[in-house]
Length: 142
Ligand code: IDP
Ligand code: MG
Image (cartoon, rainbow, N blue to C red):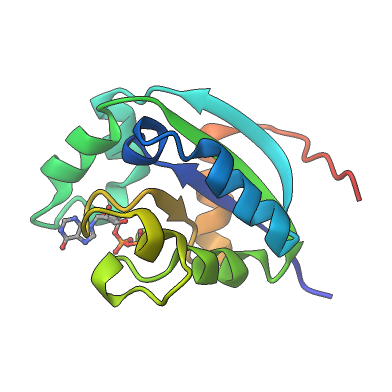
């Protein structure tokens, strides 16, 4: 067993398109357990803190403007290989390159406004979960 936790975000475009339920439903249908969930609006500063790893990228200012432009839903998903399974559900960063049936292929408008975030490694998952749910006791229902 390789039970993992991963941080997922429905980004402001996803919330604006009323995709919260659709996205959460895809996690549940995949068998990923939702063990924490909250809706928040990030400040520009919080968005910059979350995406600090990308601070040297040309898109950093635009990305953090976008991420602080409206509410987001942040969740912790749990399950066997949860990190890679969530990345599979999401699809490639650029929706034009995302596989059919993935969230980004189905709903994203472009490489920046791409509906969802998902942690990419156990190390980043731990950092990202702690960023939004500091000190959380992760509850398992199954
Ligand atoms: P990921 O979300 O698939 O892990 P990352 O490379 O970690 O992709 O980039 C973080 C986020 O930054 C992306 O989800 C997307 O919103 C935005 N982004 C990535 N590359 C570009 C780009 O080339 N132009 C504009 N925004 C980008
Ligand atoms: Mg990433």
